[in-house]
Image (cartoon, helix red, strand yellow):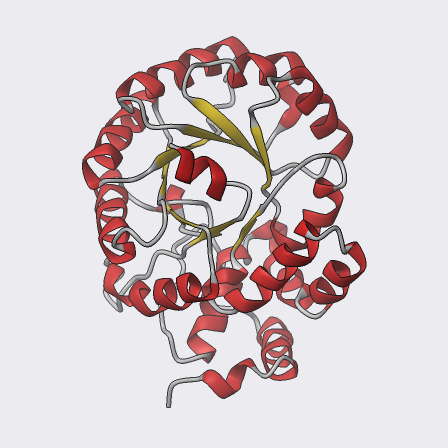
Length: 303
């Protein structure tokens, strides 16, 4: 567990899920993406995250992706496997991740409209049991459950940290103060929010950029770890257009932007599945193309 806990303060690279022309998962297309990101220094590959279109996958597909990504990483870094949906599905995915050799579980916040805070505690507790001792990273996208409920979740045996994915640094600071100091708080809103969340106690951040420009993600992380917020902001400014595209259409182009950029670089990972948008509009594509050209990334395109 020590290796995973240490790595959590680094970059959690949320990998895309590649599809072929028949809309079947095509895990092998991830190999060059994983290799480049690990060579650049990515700390934790994450399979079945939201950038991996977790909610567009069947449970069977998610199981295959966990197994295939662990095999492709081949022990070079600890792998976090995203799990969630119904409690039965989540426990099944937890058991599959154990069998695959994942180092930990990233528990998606239940999207159920009637999820009670104490019910979520029961949900995570059952997953922890199914996970057979694998450490759990909670993925919090809605902090409306309140600080007390967050503290209850973090007190569940096996929970080592939280990926904080709400733009609310003040609530994050309150949660950090309310929980055991050993809990690791990771910025879950990618590079652009990392400085603000670092300022109140987060360490490390999630990244979709890692799929195509891992060197920039690592440079931003290094600046933040050194306390050089000015340098971090300057590095973020050059990649902000990428996140601008991803945030459009109610974030419905979040994965679309990543996959469109990968296509432009010659690393086709297929289309996104509905309800995500596909393809980018002409205006969005032009914005993405400009981002890639300005940063010299198109030179790395495969001809």
